[in-house]
Length: 180
Image (cartoon, rainbow, N blue to C red; front, side, top):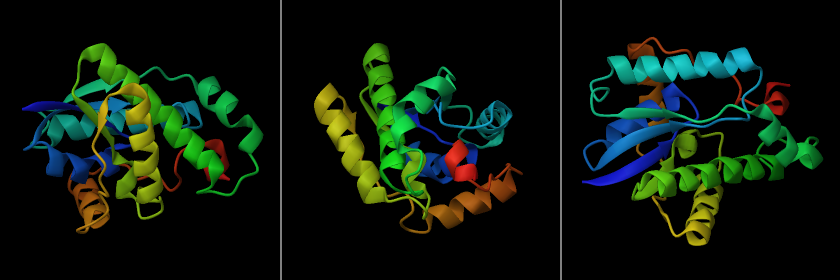
């Protein structure tokens, strides 16, 4: 079975994605989100990710890898884009930042490929996310699994699983700009 590093933005989004992937891959969830603001929100989402992996039926087979939380990495990367609208260039830069780090971690750990849960949200452009992932793949020679996880009711299923496992569902993407 191929090994997959799944970048996760949060537990609710990863829930339905994991349901789809665990039968095909040996999955490690990579929680790398320097964009999340404020810090207590970051740690709350991380705790929910741990909770999901502990209680969900795939929890015994899925590992969790915590990335380094350094909000300055995000702030520096998007400083010139802070007035951009949600879903614009700033978000694309954020996606690229997180996917590049995920690919780098794949290389460090000798993991075959990477993917992201970001496309499960109907508020995000799955095609744009996958385009970024494929570019990162080309730059790093690490395979990227391009998927639109919102298809086939993926988002609806993530909401059902969040309710089933009593997961916290945030009301903003994560960064200080989306919070506003």
